[in-house]
Amino acid sequence: MKPEPRHIRGGSFFPDQSCRERRRTTDMAMNIEPELKFRLSRRKLASLANGRIAGTKTGPRAENDLVSTYYDTKKHKLRRHGLTLRVRRAGDEYVQTIKAARMGSFARSEWEEKVESPAPDFRKTKKTPVSSVTTKKSRRKMQPVFKTSVRRITRPLNIGSSQVELAVDRGDVSAGRRSSPIAEFEVELKRGRTADLFRLARNCQRKTGGELDLRSKSERGYRLADGDDRTAARAEPIQLRSEMTVREAFHVIAYSTLRHLSSNADGVRSLDSEAVHQMRVGLRRLRAAISLFKSSLPGPSTAKIKTDLKWLTNQLAPAREIDVLLRERIRPLRHVADPQRGARAVEKEFADRREKAFRHARKALQTDRYRDLPLDVLEWLETRRASERGVAELPVAEFVVGLFRGRLRKVRKEGRDLENLSASERHKLRIKIKKLRYAVGFFESLYADAERKELARFSGRLKKLQEALGALNDFIAHRKIATDAALNAPSENRRARAFASGVLIGQEHEAAKKLMNTARREFERLKPLRAKPD
Image 1 (cartoon, rainbow, N blue to C red):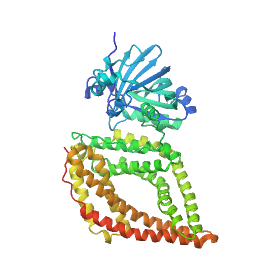
Image 2 (cartoon, rainbow, N blue to C red; image 1 turned 180 degrees about the vertical axis):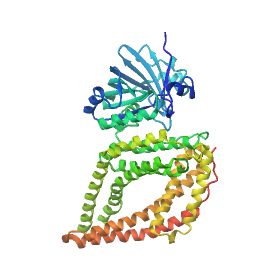
Image 3 (cartoon, rainbow, N blue to C red; image 1 turned 90 degrees about the vertical axis):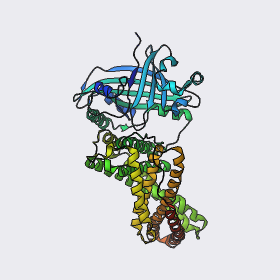
């Protein structure tokens, strides 16, 4: 008898429901089985594969060699539509699997059927998204893109009243001559409560020192196939739907920003300056989202998340600030500061400070506090309760109109008195402008194409304001750093370094006048948004 297609991992968690109950709340064909994946060192795999896991009862262990080949067109058409198609060999059997990414969730929809050979059988894709995004011509062009080969050990676990499957994978992903090791474990909820899944995940994480990984094997495979060896990851586009509630929209946005910041962890550990910058951007975007949606979020649990995000932001801040100062302000002094000895001395000192700051950032990511943070955020997203004020259940389109109107009114009011604001007040105003600009990126997909032009102009003005006020704020920090460098310089080159620092301060003093004029002009051009979400 032919097996029925299996549909799993669709959408966000439905807390405290069994798989059977979850199946009733969605499509009858949809079975939602949430999973969490962690990467770790290979030497730690055995402790999970063979050792006792606190708080659980363990069933019989199974072990399999799995070879999976992923198919797509030359231009990766399936990938562009958020789909993956693989055929996996396990023993003498072949299983074809289609997965669809779901915006704002680590869960994915999955369709699975047995096939007769290692090649895809497109007759068995008719009731899947693949049929709607491909044609006969594109199906003929499907070819192997990359392959994963893993030794998988699975263990059924009972924790509390829930049933969870633990899978431990060791192997590699390869594309042509390029390959990358796989060492990870997954915990997947088969039946029971979301809280039990997270409790088990934390037990396993503490046992192994594993780190939550929101990237799939297929993402790693496509990067290898592309020859993409960048360590820094940029933000992904956010897609919202007008029928979403405020709660649902926040989930999509927050999950995307969490992926943004966590995807840059390896780059920060390798002391990559762009990865440090991108992780800070991811942190700022997530903190901005929490601020924008604060009326719909629970207080106590949100406060802890905000505290931890601020802690990580502060750990990365010196690395980014000194890096920018060194590249944009100090190194150009070689061409204008005389004597050159002072410029070289200042540059060397700040190069040393930069190195120290980057190593401090890397050390922060090696702590338990950082390893816990992504999992804490994810659990908070999946299990948080709605605000008592009911804002969470409003249509997001209605929420967005009021958000832009209220926040823009405050920004324009404060901007009218720009020249009389203190440095601290200008800094706070810049943060408000930055949150507005992030909001444009978060909600852009809710607007029709014709109205996005107005959004783009609005965002452009906000960007100029943010950059001008940000530069003014940087100048104050630079002045303090440069003064400190001059006053504490060794006696043999103190005068030369003081002169170079004075040149830097003088340049920035002149630049500040132009920046203030730019900010004043952009505030005058900043008008209320007429565009509204569809």
